[in-house]
Image (tube, rainbow, N blue to C red):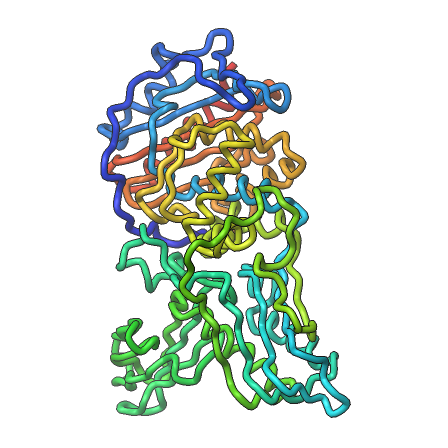
Length: 526
């Protein structure tokens, strides 16, 4: 989710477990064990002030997972558990799932990884600026082609077009060919609900996609009743992507517009009425991201005087059989796994910021689309194909091998946590957080999390008074609220905390207040 958006409706986990107070010793990274600290409330009653929060009416009947631990003294050391409840049971994590994906990506791809988008051709432009053949776009799913990394998606595409113009390109006697063969053509994870698909928080992408997968739509009333309404949208791809059937109503008439996506024709349709000279603005999911991004790039090239005679074509992957596995997690890679096709030279290119900079909006703003792109990038770079299953495999193998997690403590149906079928245990989340803290990229990972008062983060208006002492990831879908991360207590000790609630069947606001109150208790308790 993004800040200020409404909590999406997602199906809850099929089975919720009866929560017990759980103690014990379980294997940790490198054979270590999570040990209870002296005086820890493990397998015993929780402190009264903690229990008082858990006894609030809004949490009655809810499943609550809780773990508070001292930060280990060094890498590979066990968690010193202070408090826990249901720490080894599996919960739907909502956007706390982004902790799992972001940590795995930083470890598997490496903090120096950068996304690259290239325009290739058989030969450089001739003296006349002409390429005889196709102009091939190779993109590795770069999620930075738009805000907040550029002023707009158009700005990113114009920068790529400017690079081509500086290389002397003036005419392409062929097509603008998008090579999407290393990614599957599926744009929606299997765990998402149909009702989410037109919402911006359910935007999806592909091998080449821009503007966070979103479509900015504006409908304006005409000067007189009965006039056709005017419809504009950004980024502008194909001219027929939005079908306009809306008309101007009477002065003062309430706007009554119906906006829907037609998958059969891959177009949006706008119907209804809008008052004269009124405006209605909406942010929607693109729903046809690769094709629209390619046509938006074609427009950018044309605006720089570069003629492409054959229009746009997208090459989707052919059916595969017996594909071989990709490189192991952590392998040094740069561009898309398929690499540059033989016989082509680079005409122009864009390169993203380094991966920790890219991960920050995922953690601080809870950006869903960027997270899904990152999962599929891991599949393309380190697996067989840019799809979710391969990406999930890389995430799981990385965290099992590097962070010492048990595979059964993780279950994936998407990367962002919008699906209600993901699963993780509080102990697994705590271990990821503690393990990440000691990695070469750990400081950047921690600083990328939301913090009280951080502008545009999901904690901007929460946990006031704990500024500079808490970095955490929020999580909200229907019947799920979560908050996990790092804190420094009143004595200056660094701690890891995980809070997961499922099936409260209550408005999210009081659940969030309960989670915030628990964090305040954790920060103030001796």
